[in-house]
Figure (cartoon, one colour):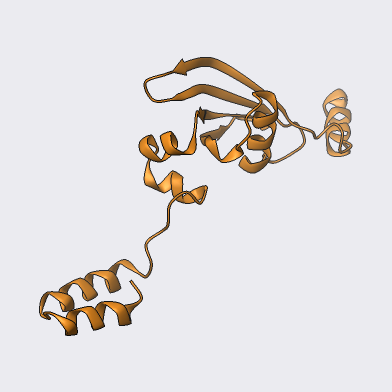
Amino acid sequence: TNWRRSWLSAWGTMSDAAKACTIRTKKFITNPLLGRRQFVVEVLHPGAAGVSKAEMREKLAKLYKVQDATTIVLFGFKLAFGGGRSTGFGMIYDSTTVQKKFEPRHRLIKVNLAKAKVGARKQRKELKNRLKKLRGLKKAKAKAGSGN
């Protein structure tokens, strides 16, 4: 158990250079029908809890020479037991127009390519039902006054 204690103490005092993450891609596929390249991303980050997707996006953009980092989509990351390694899925779209066509809306909202709905769900439903009872100018005024 002595070697284990010494190993743990060394682990706790790692420098910033040792905490740098390493990104590897596996199962790389070019998908021309969907206008993207898709792959499994493996991130090694010893001594760090996790790596931000923005940081990974920048590193992948540099690695694959992508001009617009918003065309890189990363999701589904799971931390390996014991830490130090995360695995997820990544896609690099050919352009933002192709990305808007094929990506789910919730992921487009995350990278500011689509707008999130305004207001709470219940308020939107109440407004919709109120508008059903109105016609013409009154309906237009009620809709404009709501902010939708």
